[in-house]
Length: 309
Image 1 (cartoon, rainbow, N blue to C red):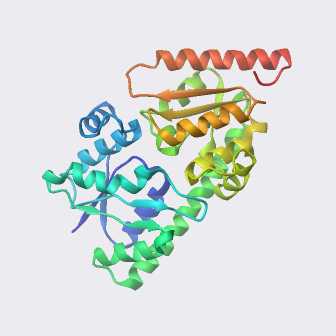
Image 2 (cartoon, rainbow, N blue to C red):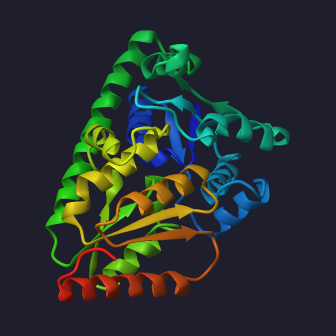
């Protein structure tokens, strides 16, 4: 039986309900790489170019872990996931990067292409993938529709979890970060843990309703080309009145995030905000000091009756 490998990085955190339900409904076995750890990160660093962002390096580490444990590795190519804009070029290039990086290992890739400008919509892409896997069109169609329902249910659960976070007591800190960063236990986990240890409530901005965040993003910038970043910007506009502070969390040296975070720092002036850049170095002492100081400032402002910096 064919076994598909799924790297637990990048778009896994956005689409894994869709992928896993689709493969399961087609009766295809799959394996997901483990949670990111030091070995996976270091492995990815040996394959990636120095200029690649830490998230890209981690992705290559997950691919390397899977290469001898499955028949194909799922590596989608995403250009325009919807009418709301494009994405960072790493999602468009990652298929070619993986293919060329591991070309001497005989790695085999399963992919689908999403590019609305070329009429490669998601349904058509999944039908092609089903055909490649030897499944009938009718089987693939049903599997895709079931998978979309699972994806929708997961999104509703995220929105419910966001509501639950907002109802907790304590200083509420909105974390503006891609899910593949903040929900990765090795990269984003320490930040959430440090906030909890210091009595604060981490609010995951990427859990917000995507349609609402895309609409609200225009309040801060109407010209951003990257749809995933627009969702995060919209989460700031949507939630800033319900939180006490904002952490902009990114991995070094992400180009789109560096621009978008600068826009947020310049244009959102009525709430305390800090920019945290994770570079993969060991130890959390620096993060702990910055987060503790940030929370102290927020507490001082709240006690003193002031808002913002």
